[in-house]
Length: 315
Image 1 (tube, one colour):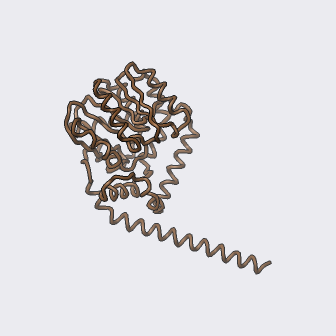
Image 2: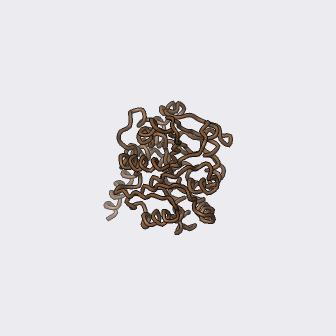
Image 3: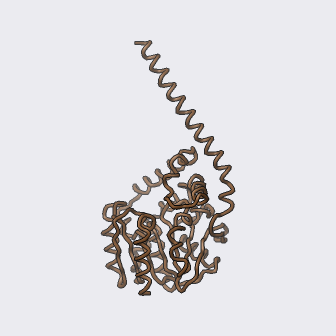
């Protein structure tokens, strides 16, 4: 019996040692890659920086036209400009297109101040002003940035010509969110940062990058994901979800022309219902239902483009 236990102990010790060596190897490899990718982060592939609140904020601008489409990233997007690039290229012959990378996203700096909706919108507005982009804007939010677009239209209606929701979140989607959920989200972000710092994220990062990008775009996106994923700046946004929802729901929903491009709802139970209920509060609202996942502009770009162009005819 003792001999069997001794053998078992050695086997387990050997397994632990192998795992430890693998993890150390992965971590070392990741650090080497991060050092080699430093140039990709310093030499921004697309867009430029503007100073906002004493920090550098990344913004991409292309095209000219009567209307300005401002694309806003969903929560936790490590590379918004690159992720949007293929889709917005469809529009820059006819419109001016803009992608804002909030602090903690893409090539923008980290920011240790408040991440409430008031601050995020104020920073977005200042970035546009610093870049010389005047309103009114057609805000095109994806996912969580839908709350920013709603707040923006509520408080600065003269700046918002319309809202095009790319499966954007609406306030009611967070009505069931409580402090327990916030703590759970914060825990996920914490362990995600641990995985990133250990180099584990690099093993799966490639699978998160959609097809159709150039080699340089893929390399830049990889560099951003492996260095910025789940950083504290955008992780802190989740701490303000209840605050953001409360602030927005204390005001009337903005009655601006609105197009809601909606996914199949698999992201969350009740998602489609929330979108439809929101549309009923808007005088001029159009809803387009797609049979695809949450990233509608990546999964169904043709249908999204068609819906947006048809909607734009009425503006």
